Length: 214
Image 1 (cartoon, rainbow, N blue to C red):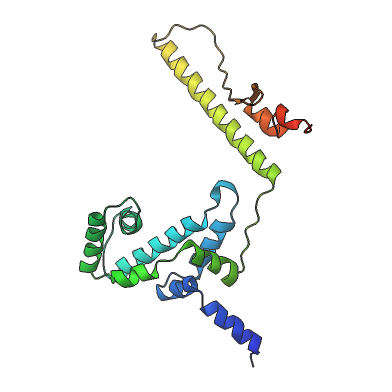
Image 2: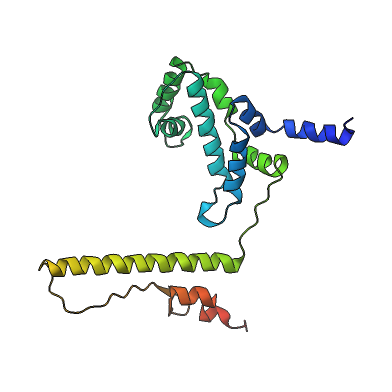
């Protein structure tokens, strides 16, 4: 026999709009897992709650279109979702998109009521699934930025060298032996001091910010 506490927990879980819609639209348990994975991922792989809400709503639209027997081409669902929800979309274009879906059998009023906000996604992930996002440590974030910058500098150097060599080999540029230097310099306007960006990141502060206040 289940305890009262178990019954209350079950009721709380059922109250999740996102969980209910995953079941109603037949999105599958793995869809919820993927939302959690994207929210708790590190670095550039992580998606915000707003991005996940858009992803979820697009999936609802795709499911509703499929149930109505609509065939789509790549990018069409995303474009229709933008037309339905984008702030920059004109009322005429939005009305045209809604009319098209209605004519093809989509219950657009119900669909738009089912669209969720980022708050609903947050409630689903934190309270329904018990997920927690652990922020990267400051040192790890700085390390990731340094790695990204160094990779971009290396790529820029490689492209520049290759381009100059091609131009030189085809007599479109007169140039002797050369070396490429790719530097990103940061100027602190408070103390007029310049830093190599990687050195500044490793140091953690500008010279004028390192002294104790008088």
